[in-house]
Amino acid sequence: MLLRLVLFLVIVVVVVNEAANYTHCNIIEKIIKPPTECIYNPDEYLDVQQIIARHGYPSETHAITTKDGYVLKIHRIPGPKSGKRGGQPVFLQHGLFESSADWLINGNNSLGFLLADEGYDVWLGNARGNTYSRAHVSIPMDKPKFWNFSWHEMGTHDLPAVLYYVGNITQKPEQIIYIGHSMGTTMFFVFSSMYPVAAKNVKLMIALAPVAMMTHIQSPIRFLAPFSSNYQWLAKYLGLYEFLPDSKLIKFFTHGCDLLDVNREVCESLISVVCGYDKEQFNEKALPLLLKKDPAGTSTKTVMHYAQEISKGDFQQFDYGTSGNMAAYGTVAPPKYNISAIETPIYLMYGENDWLASYVDVQQLAEKITSLVGLYRIKLKSFNHVDFLFGKDAEKLVYRPLMRVMRKFPEHYS
Image (cartoon, rainbow, N blue to C red; front, side, top):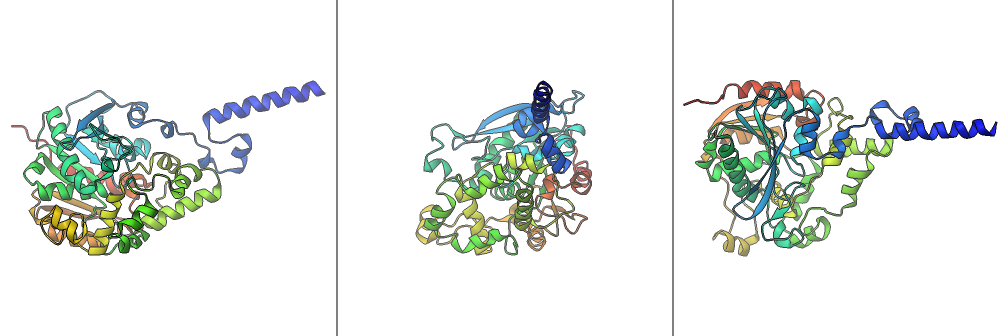
């Protein structure tokens, strides 16, 4: 009898260990937890190049150095699984706290993979300060000077460098289609308004959840606005240089959300509070992967710059205060970005339930863009800010309509 009991316990241990290798749950957890919470997704433990390769696509990583010395890593899917190459280049730029991984959150239905399936040469950008772009030719990452940037520098230094690089490598200058989400759109509005000639390297810009005007933002992030000029307060509570590097909230998001059912519900609720509530599109399967990859990091100054946008109501350069502005710009107030100077064709896509990119602000932005070629409202009233990346029906609601627009801007062969 004792021998049988020992044998039974050995078998249980083996089975449990074996199960743990392929799921997030042991045998008991499989019984008491919903099946979706036990699914093992290898992408959670891979970097972007490995994720691309695991899904069967060709994968490359490139390093580009900006004029001010930041070393940016960008990822490339040069074509479909069939091996065909030479398609029109498409550059995808992530939003705040994100990385190139966010374009792959939805597995095979992610925009990065779907564009590759259509034959495009897909490039995935990474802004300075995130997981893949934390290097400088002379400044260590732990020095304050490294983090002295906002999305202004991302637009004036990062984008010119990477877009020139993509045009040069593909030998297809002026044929690039740019797709940005959230901060990825802000970066492009900065770039194209300040350097309209250089922006001609882009044939079409598609903005998902565009962010420039922020007067009507509903997200609790708006409560940062009153403190946007109080650098000491921000340094004390948000982190002096890198935004929230040791925050308990961040650690909760990245490590605690997938441990207990109640934590998972809290995570879903927090995301809804920040971005807009949309239970219908919330992709529970993608949540563990999302929490492994985000937040990918940025500077406190980047967040401060957005807080100033909310507070001031203008799309303008960073406000250093009267004396600081005189030193930086020679004027009392920071210069405004001249959106009407943009010459690149712009197509805007927005959701009515987006608490970060309010549809009112998007419509006001559209009125200022003289090169606007379209303003598209997502055909679902509850669609929110993050649904553009990992909503259950993002392919049908966003990506297929987006690709129909892209086909109207094909490569021009001289």
